[in-house]
Image (cartoon, rainbow, N blue to C red; front, top):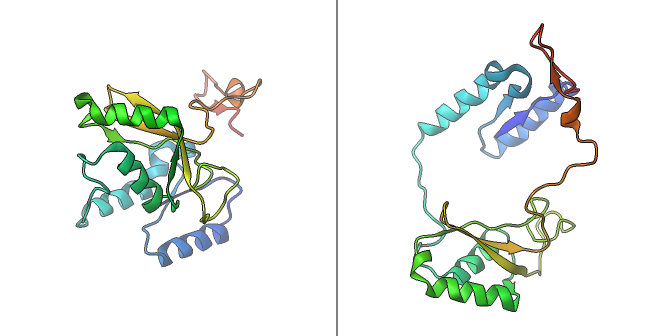
Length: 182
């Protein structure tokens, strides 16, 4: 895990987060790459290299030949903690057509849902119980070979405000310093 360190973070806060993370058995590094570039990512780079040297017992959650609807059900239950899946009629028809089409036999499944909850609903925090994952559509990305079931209401591209922060960021051509980040 990388702790993104920002100017207002205290040493006590960083130590507290590090302690909790390490107690959970997770490797931890502090990163200031956003401020110091590569120099600020050295601790993180060392942690990644260390992790790469450890033996791994990786296994896929599902076999590639598992039908799409079974994959989605498995992901919903095992990863998100759902009781099951609810398909809209349109999404289920699309899933059936995909399962019957040989072109999609080697496509992987990538779920599309909010990042704000384990569920489809950004208001359900923690580990919600007693819910079903609603699938409303399936996106097909043939170049990447991804089948992407969409859960709940989600925008595919985050919107920006009418005055996004990037408009205030610039580089001073004489000093090379970035202005407007803070």
